[in-house]
Image 1 (cartoon, rainbow, N blue to C red):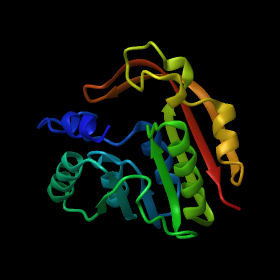
Image 2 (image 1 turned 120 degrees about the vertical axis):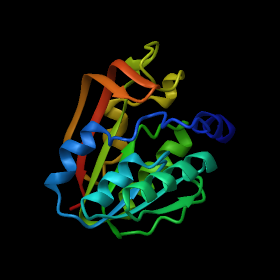
Image 3 (image 1 turned 60 degrees about the horizontal axis):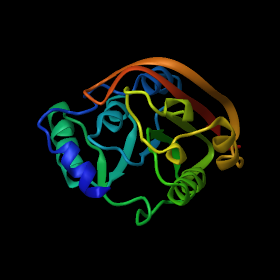
Length: 198
């Protein structure tokens, strides 16, 4: 999979665009800036947006191509993001540290998914926020993006279980029209989650 993502991100274009995810752009201005973590951040668009609003942003991905393009984006925008080259399994999550963790289309096989979600919840400090957007299982077979294996797509029940330690404020399945670069285009079945660590 690392080779797959390195090849996808090797293009000179930002394959999911340079603008932030729409859900993040709707929610983030409502949360006072603090420390934010962006796992599996790809080319940096969401971390860059957070940093532009005054957040202290950490991000990681295991694709060197993604990291290179993310750093170019940060330089063009005149912002700083602490971007680490790391897999989910090897990243050193700091417990009780972040005011926000944003998971944006971070689709993984079941064991890695459960590990990432557990670490994301533990990384939040008391009062911290988890935001998540990803593809619902109903996305399978659609051409607007996402994994081609059902086990890597989300259900509401699965996310509720994964983040049972948090206070869920919103957990919904939505039909949205995606316009995020070349690979997220068209009508899509997505899951959006807002949760808080009490």
